[in-house]
Image 1 (tube, one colour):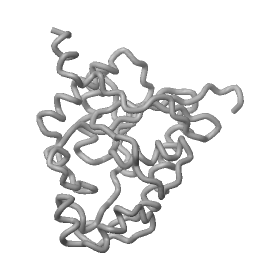
Image 2: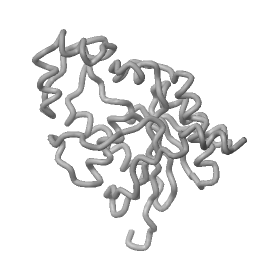
Image 3: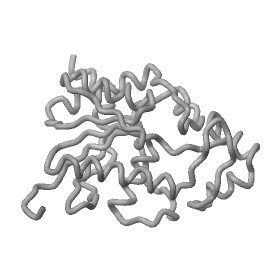
Image 4: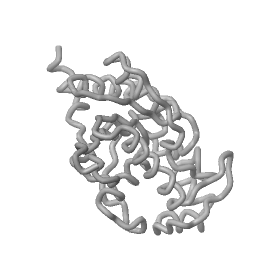
Length: 218
């Protein structure tokens, strides 16, 4: 193990959806990319076209898989799907605007905003997860892909919550601390895994999304 080079991971949040744009909570609800999200996915694929990727993996939700497919098509690479990389399930919060969540579920909303990581969410179409349950699903999934591909380069396309969990794991941040870092659509976030632990290399690369960058290509 000592002689194995670290496994490199590019962790990517999916492109924008209409619900992202209006701050409507998606969770496990399966929402497609909007036109801007599709543009972001194409820009992302172009930005990463020159980088070597051994394995391309996506969450099973459409917004992530569509983003990942743009990458895979650009490099003629197979796409692996892993449901463990789904966004957190928010139960009865899903499909609502933030203001509507506060109105309909004031107690649960307050616990969520207070970072109660074991707070149970109200039931909805899907069964909600506590933040701790979500973290305990996501981080082992990421590390599992690294363990199965030691010394290789992976691109994982997932969701804002998944990126948050990886960031916290890499920096050793307690789950209860506020999310005082941005998690941006179609952002490039780089990690390595060494001796079974995530380490952060860079966070929140989005220069590839600026329209001026696209114009320069013309």
